[in-house]
Amino acid sequence: MTAGRGRTLLLVTSVLLALVVGVVLATRSSGGDRSAVRPDGTEATPVLPSAASAGVPSVIVPGRPGEVAATLDPRALRDTAAPRYNSLDVWFVRMMIPHHGQALQMAALARDRAGSPGVRALAERIRSSQGAEVGVLQGWLDTRGLPREVAGHDHATMRGMQSASAVRRLAEARGEEFDRLFVRMMSDHHGGAVEMARDLLAVGVDRTLREFADGVVAEQRAEIARMRDLLAP
Image 1 (cartoon, rainbow, N blue to C red):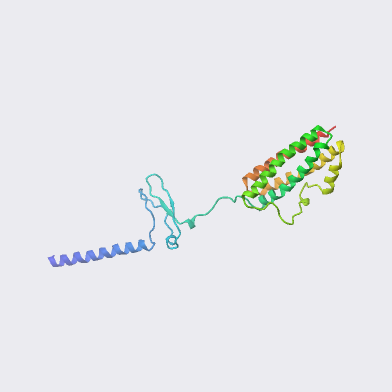
Image 2 (cartoon, helix red, strand yellow):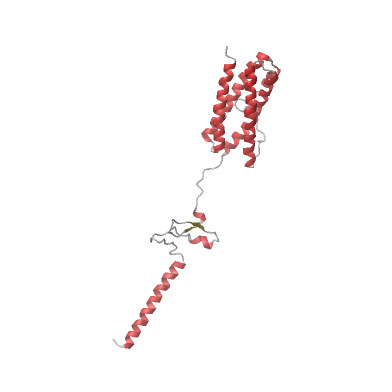
């Protein structure tokens, strides 16, 4: 092989090599290969080509010790968390506030009308526990920026709610008659609250409210049994 032919062959080889390198670089810059390679030779999660062009900031996902971080397009991420609350959670809170309110109204009457010390003691327990619970329920709505009232809703239709005329009869009663009416009305009222709480436990998703509803079911069922015992012969 002459020196001239050798130089020509070397020149052709260099040109071909330059072309190959140019094609590889062009492919990578156009998004053909955007994988991050870890030290062990495996590929990290690739970057979505459209993220940078759309001006969306990337999310860096740290690798294991000794590995490079992977870069993700945040639009590829999905929010898999359960909803914090749903419409039944909100309904339950808004209805339970006035429901508790009537229980507090009836319990307040027992102080100077009840004939049985046991009825008075139970009424005070209801005032103490449900008064605090109303504050919890109001705070739940306030922290979420939700109104406490629903315009146009008739609270008298809620389960366990006593009619205005029945509450007036209770206010007019004294002694044994008051005790009998109080036990009957409050037992019915508690039963309605238990049903509302069970509805929430079936469909509601807020963890705090589910714990609250569990407490309503347990405590008010126990108080119903206690009230029945108070008037047992």
